[in-house]
Image 1 (cartoon, rainbow, N blue to C red):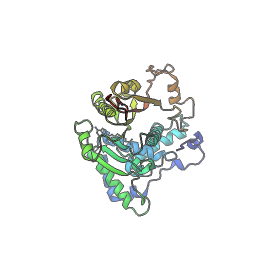
Image 2: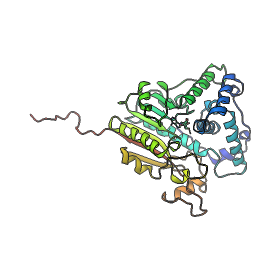
Image 3: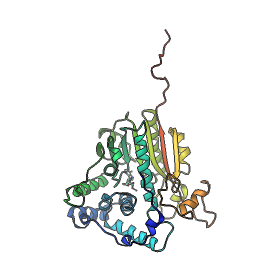
Image 4: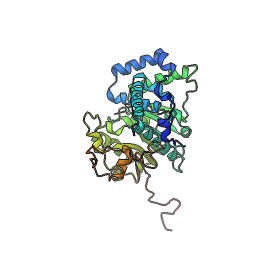
Length: 348
Ligand SMILES: C[S@@+](CC[C@H](N)C(=O)[O-])C[C@H]1O[C@@H](n2cnc3c(N)ncnc32)[C@H](O)[C@@H]1O
């Protein structure tokens, strides 16, 4: 998968980016319009975060092919992010709004694909916790041998299903909407409660089957104890079967900004995850060679400046601003093989 683009892609002469073009289905389908009106009226910030994320993926379309994201995000989130991106481009900003989201999406896509292509990964089941408006099951061919489970609040999954159904039924723009996964199951659950794993099992999740857990944009919405409880449940799975965790972690300064709705943080997820049972952990920062995708070429942009500072530093020495970091982490573990296979255990 190659997603390399140059800075010129973002600051080029064509002016297409100045105008927001919305799909007809978003503007004209009564079902889709009603659903988005309900979101505006009734959803809390947790659920709305799903639409904000989808807006990012829709508008970073020069690197992410996710046309359904327009429908799932809805007009108001698209307009709001589009305005910010336009302003950034006109001001020649070093960082264009939504770039973190674009890099994060591409990192999860590429790590997921690599995990599925690894010797332990083939035919793994894939669980998207806090799946929101994620359309990986529709976008990624690498999921073709995988049973995919999307876990989120019932209201989010219901809205998602309604919008995707409308897209499927549309005769022109979205006629080829279909899941590429071997199977796709939506599981309505609140992962702060004790019953989410049982609900997942009832829906067909197999506890002994190799599993890739995708926690994108989720952990920091939980309290420390809620997030640790979820992470411990996943770490315990390493004793049962080959388990891969893909997750992003905010560091402390990211959650202590005023008005922040974020709670859980970890400054050292690469130490935290081994301490609860994962054996291999690889941490990347936005802008690292594997978390770059040609979108962060300016050495003076915020992310490249941060990467040069030791991770223990919480305030930027140049200007006193907090060092807000997002860590992209891949962790894995497998049951220990105490007895080598095919070796006799008793001596005659
Ligand atoms: C920022 S969105 C990210 C969605 C998706 N992972 C993506 O990257 O597009 C966070 C999602 O987590 C879901 N979420 C937050 N807390 C949750 C909980 N306690 N149980 C289930 N889902 C939760 C929200 O409803 C929302 O869809």
